[in-house]
Length: 114
Length: 215
Figure 1: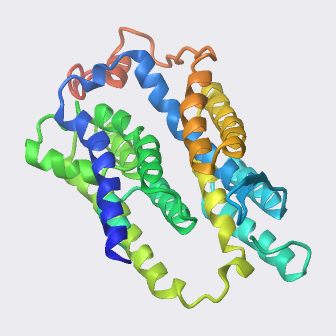
Figure 2: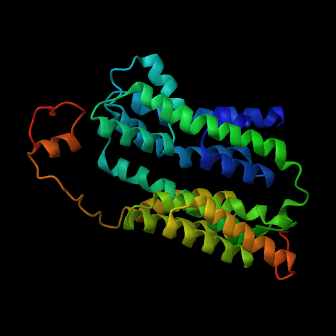
Figure 3: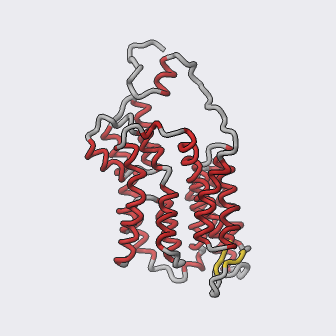
C-alpha cells in the first residue's frame, strides 16, 4: 500500500469515527427526531444497492463516457442475491457468483471485463 | 491493511478498494464512506444507555470498533444478561470481529498478488455481489426495500447521465427520501404495555427490572 492510500484511509476514518462516537459520547443523541432516525436507517440499503447496481450495469469506456452494460455479471449478482436472501449466507452467495462468472468466462460464453 | 486497521468498516472498505482501482476521485470515495457509515450513528445512540457508566476515554475507544457485527453481538449479549457488560463488548468487538477481520485482510494481502489475471476467476464480481448481499442484511421492511430499489435505479440513471460516482451518491441520497414516503408499519408489541416484560424491552437496562419479580 502506498502512502497515498494510507492518507485516504485516515480521511475515511475521519468521516467514519464521528458517526460511531457521537452517540456514545454526546448525551441525548438517542433522542434524535424520528424523521432523521428513519432516514439514517434507509441510507445503508440505498447506498449499497446503488453501489452494486452501478458496478454491474454501468461501464466507463476509454472515452470516459458511461454506457449501459449487460453481461453474465447480472446473473451472478442475482443468484448471489437470491442465496443471501433465502439462506442468509453471504459467503455462499459470493462463491456462487464467482463460480458462475469464472465458469462462463472459461467456457468462452462471457467476455472478460473491459 | 491500513484500511482494515484504521477505517475498520467492511462495506466502505470494499467500496473504496473497488473505486480506487477504477480511479474514482477521493472526495467521492470519502463522501460515499460517510454515507455508508452514517448508520453507525444509530448503533452508538442505541448502545449509549447501556454504556453510560463506562469512563469517557474508554467509550471513545469503544467507538472505533463499533460495527454492524459487534453491535448485533453486543446488544443480544446485553439483553440476555439484562445488564451492560463492558468486557463482553470488548470480546465481541475485538475478539470476534476486529482480530479475525484483520487476519483475513493480512491473508488476502499475502496471497492475493499470487493470482494471475483475477478477472479470469470472476474476482471482479465479488464487489457488487458483496454490496447487494450486505444490503439484503439491512433490509428489514418495505421502506428499506423501496429505498434500495429506488437507490439502485436512480443510481444507474444518474451514473449513465453523469458518472458512476455521481450515480452512487445520488442513489444513496434519493433512495431513502423515497423510502420515507412508504408508511412505516407500527412496531409489534409482543409484551403488553405496563408489564415488567414490556418495561424490560423498552427501557434503559435495569431501570424497571427486578430479579424477584414473578413473570
